[in-house]
Length: 474
Image (cartoon, rainbow, N blue to C red; front, top):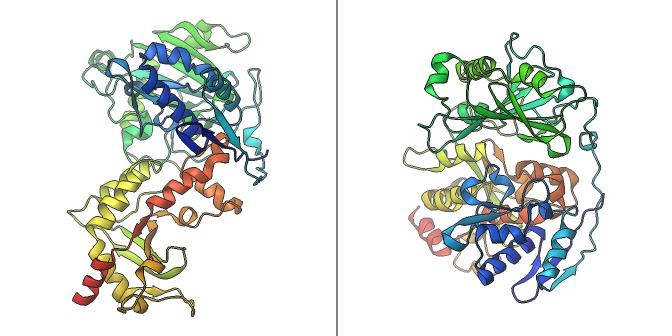
């Protein structure tokens, strides 16, 4: 499939926009001009234009924040804050452009000449709702064995992966629901990748506690829903392999979405997977075992075994030519937020925490020490014609011409080199960046825009006055 590098310009308020930027800017302008209520706004920007993930949501009710522009909520009528989907690709862009035209926005296109091929993987093959061959888990997830006595009558061919959406106790006002995901072919509970918090790993909620009476009766007697599908990818039930969703309350109540498996009634399905006693037992089983070591072979980012935390930083010219590096610079300080921010990055790298860590903590809290480390213990680039740290100590060093910058290439176990050295022609590097930044296939054509943001966040201009001051002091 060809990668689409189209950029868009909207007359009056935006040039050289990628897909998600175009959509956001038009919605933002529409809100500013028309001051709509939520119902009025969603009647214009309908969910079906975006597709299965939805177009506009109330910020307070977003359940999958990575799929929406939560960094820039829009305030509409009555002070309600909404967020706009960031899931735009070649499949849904035509529908949006048609809407923009109807709304009298003048959008012009600029097609880049760069076209590359993306090799399709068998994992992305289309599925259907018949009794198909059950898919494999694409990535490694933490797992926990399902007790043998539970859900014995369920058949994996009815939908390999089950996601239970259950209600917390009213005492947890900030966390209304939690989830349990089961792989019924391998008969394991599936946890979320790269989560250090036990509740988040197994229940997708920071706190979990069912209603006290359910615990006393050892029976989950509340309402809940179950979704089923044949592919589980990146902590989500894959939309393309979705099978069905049912509503339950002490058994099967109704079919919400999709189609029941061939020849299987709702009552049979409910008897197999919706018994209140078994729901409580699987919940209780996870609660008892969630603190034990998870069964996973590998993780893209794993928490360090020791309490130390270090970073690697490069000193470069503004044109990216390397001057020198420092390795294993210790940032493990009791009074620093770097460690806490780093732990948050392990849970969710594609968040605002990265910019906050680098610019407001690393380069703010440690900048004098970083300069001193470069001045006294740095490793030269090895380029005999390049500038050196000794050159930077001289009075006649041209700061304006060389424009030195600091570039973070590693934080703890997180290797940033694919991002800070990004080359769109290097397919391996591209895939690593997409994996780190959670860029899906539909958005791969816009990956350079995502990556550019992180490249910018990892850089910090050298303060020549402070650098000279530290140099004089040592």
